[in-house]
Image 1 (tube, helix red, strand yellow):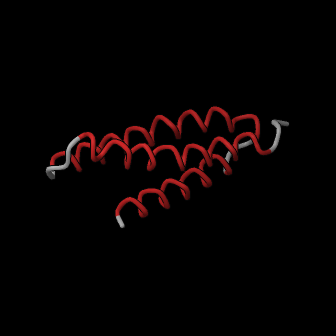
Image 2: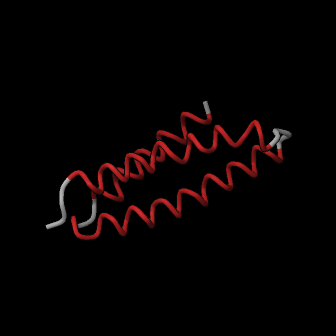
Image 3: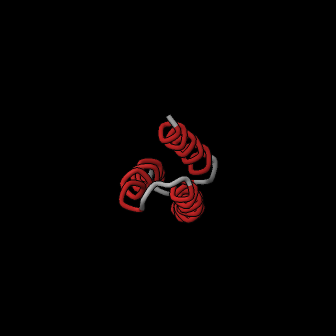
Length: 83
């Protein structure tokens, strides 16, 4: 359930951040979002490992949590060409 919550929050944030800026700034906002989301995912990875999960168990889940929202942000950033 925690994984789903993180993915949904990431999708909402990606939509809000990339959709709220002018088209010319969308690629920059994509990069800002990707870095910020990587920090959040790293924190979540460390939290999982501190609760006894191994890196091998956590890494595939964290990659999913990172890739899905960043892929949406990338799609939104490139959906409409910059004006």
